[in-house]
Length: 174
Image (cartoon, rainbow, N blue to C red; front, side, top):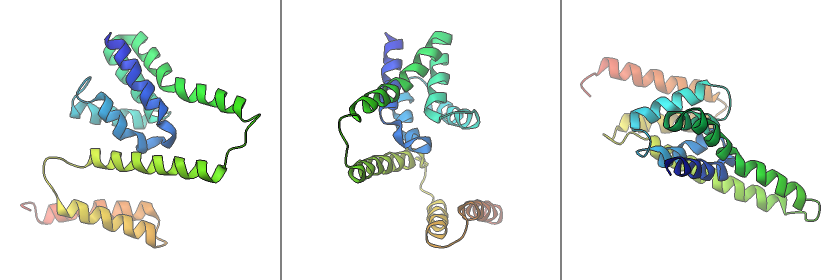
């Protein structure tokens, strides 16, 4: 019965995985924590899923499935996360022969859903233990620099990290 719950959870993740990458991490966390792992285990899961080749949802399904039910769990969880996208591609290919959707409306719908999932991911990854105004300020500053200037986002992210580390080194009590 636990295996069915695992498969259903990853099937649901597969249904909304069109945003890919970090946009899906929040939903994976909602489905996995605390049922199959704790917060620390989830952080490790995200780290491992990011460094292994392939989409994060697929890697997470494989890792959680393996932890819960061995090779069979890994295989079935992996298949469950890709089941809906594969079935959707087949259905869309069949329907596209007869119907032409409004592409602009479809893209707007997908963009809206992706934005919602990215905001959910941001919310679930925010530190819950204590509010850190420096972290929020530096994050917003990096976002602003990357979004509204010609500065490469990599430099704004690295700069925010460096400034936070320097601030913590100079003022460890704060």
